[in-house]
Length: 338
Ligand code: NAD
Ligand code: WQD
Image (tube, rainbow, N blue to C red):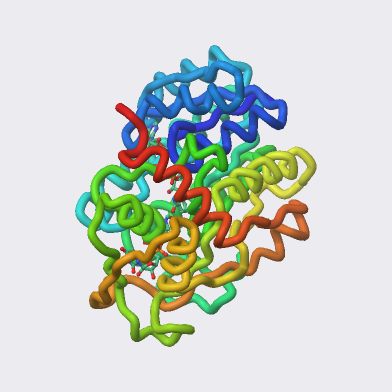
């Protein structure tokens, strides 16, 4: 297939591009580099041994998106492009709605005009809202607790409505749990700008000496050790889930399919910290801080639908995730070069 990967220079997109090429697909990347560096492109090319067809523009620009679809004979779209920081979305809600919904509008319009009917969309477990029962199943009601989460709920609804109007559409809504890890080569990984919001990149920066200690947000949750429990999934497993979903969409009659991509296993903050200590070979300092607003005690997937329908399941362990993150962070202490 000839696949347009929106946000293909980002953390999950870059790993997925490498696997798409390895699986024999032609890939066209669109990225504005709003939250990624251009040097990732050379890293992708080194791993695939092929040049990346890159279009650097903002996908909220409908005319440019339309022009690209006119030039390329595309079969499918994998849509990663969007802003993803929860706290920032509370401070800049209009930017989040404009960017995350705007990219989706441009793509859906261009797909409709050019007869492209296959779309794999990056949704999130955040659509399960404030206090969902665990393990989370796909048919739970959706809601959100912050503007970022609402953009995902709204995009899912936009896709459902579009598929009612055009039943030829085949759309996968992939609800990721907590993506972490890095390419096993150590050449690609997560490179947040500024202070990391998420746990794994924060721990990795403590391990490499960029931050003094981890702040643990609360140790009085009703969990195994009082710290928050999450379903961490290796980015390589996640990327493989996209390829499985893409193939499944060519065989299904369902216009919209929803699949959780998680391991089904919960890991606490302290368990992840100790696993990382094993990977990097030294102790990592931490202090317990108050709970972070909006956090829930436990989040983990019921991944059985993806296994039954996609033949996919996550295979990498927490130790694999920490080992690969450490390889990436220790080889690239400051992330990607400019
Ligand atoms: P990322 O920020 O690394 O990648 C997103 C990419 O999209 C970046 O390269 C950015 O430059 C690009 N982009 C943003 N707006 C754009 C626009 N208007 N036009 C063109 N390019 C644009 O994020 P990621 O972690 O790789 O996440 C990818 C997707 O998965 C996002 O939609 C995110 O919301 C979703 N998701 C991520 C997580 C997570 O924890 N990483 C969890 C659930 C869902
Ligand atoms: C994990 C655990 C924290 C940082 C977020 C988004 C979600 C999704 C994935 C996109 C929690 C604790 C964290 C730190 C800590 N993104 N923690 N110290 O909150 O599960 O999910 O990213 O869709 O929408 O909300 O992930 O990595 O931020 O936190 O103690 O410095 O680590 O309290 O228990 P979260 P996270």
